[in-house]
Image (cartoon, rainbow, N blue to C red; front, side):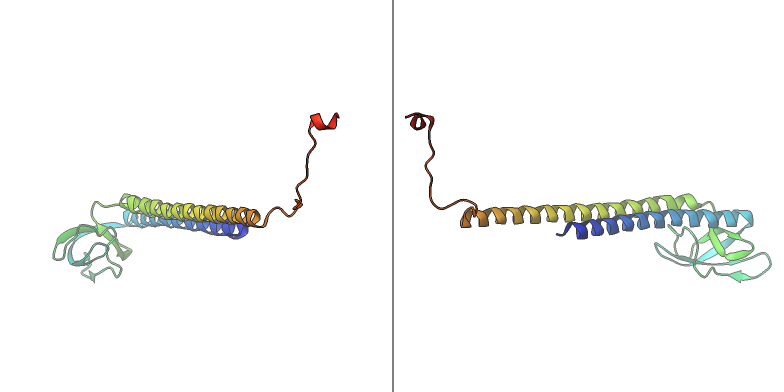
Length: 173
């Protein structure tokens, strides 16, 4: 593989690793910002879980002013919720679409963010090692083929005729 191409691919892989790490950091920062916003204008109500899966939970709740709300993107931190469950929900009074189960916080996002970064860097590292191994084998194969070709054709700098070399005993006579 051309060294320039290999170097560019390695740089792209490193940039990809940095992007994945940045995504994890942004995930944690966004969760922290949402929690801070909820904490600044917090209200708590009981809510009914309408639907729930591993990554999403939809709830309905009624605010003290009598309005019903169902956050359009679901709850933050929706793990371990089941349909039909009745839970306490903390929400932002100024934005009822921003809601989370009571007692949960942004720290729950740290482990998923770290796992995203670690898996990203493991993939980048594995691809970089594979590329360097492939490159090493290609270089090794091409150098051994060059040596084999040179042995078959002979050394172009050497004459075909054999020359006798003088030994010190014959040169003294």
